[in-house]
Image (cartoon, rainbow, N blue to C red; front, side, top):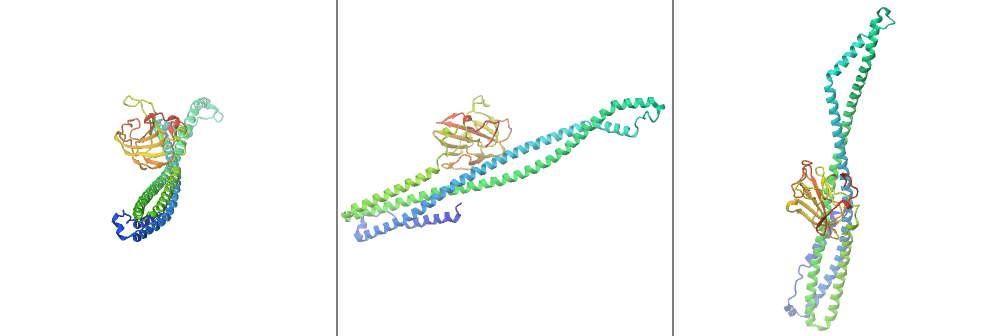
Length: 431
């Protein structure tokens, strides 16, 4: 990753170039009063400055190339980190469900044992009586044969039932002990997973800040260099025109030099644009990505495209119930066409996927990308809040206050069914 002082160095280089070119203004016609010698000297100074700027431009182009590669590396790190976040969210959700199931089973056992308190008390009392006063054996006291026979008959009918009840009690008490141990283990794992999730979220915030800083640096540097080039070209042209009026023999030579400089500048600009276009281009055309896109967030599908909404109409997109502060990622490569509040949609993000396709995401509490920014599939673009936001497209109340992400695909402005594009079609969506 580029060091911060490297970026500062390039910024200083640009600042020096701007300072040296600050006096590049139009040369008035009355400048001819200074004579052709002074004008020729000034032109030579401008040409020398242009040669210096050419060297600086090459250094800047090299720096821009390194920044472009750095942005691409950051995109890969963002995709990997967002994937880990969504995996942690899925594991936490599963752990919470297991913990809830164990707690429910423990409550059922407690309720069952509590409701059978009297019965269990009688069972224990009966076992104690049998232990203290067992029926007399026939072989020891033949005179009491009737009592021994009655005792044997009583044991034959009562002891199996007591034994079964005692065994059931032992199993339930043992299960209660196991459940408590499992609850402690699940709570420990849940605490550890929540800690790891917090670390990954901080890492995503750090990477997003770095990417936005580098992107802004590229834009500012390129725009500054273009302005400086226009200013120098304007000054050079004015001086050449003045010399042309004073010395006609030099017109053809200066014109040829101007054309050569413009041709070189155009070629450099073309190469610069080609380099940026190579990076800022979808890896796979949207029309060819059917069955390859992943859902933008972890959660459960509440309403599919074409399903009836609460107003009696048909849903034009997919609604996903997520956990609080869930990470939202870009379903596909594309350019951010819109990011911010929009009418009844609340916070709305629109990604231009090319070929007339657009992806709309609504329901987020925070959007982490800017208009004009290029994002890769799987890159984090925002986060959900703590509850469902008020929006014209989010009107589902079945999940209470859980956050809801609304996803809509459009082709030439018209809503289309997104299901053919998703990879897999489980009830639980995976990012």
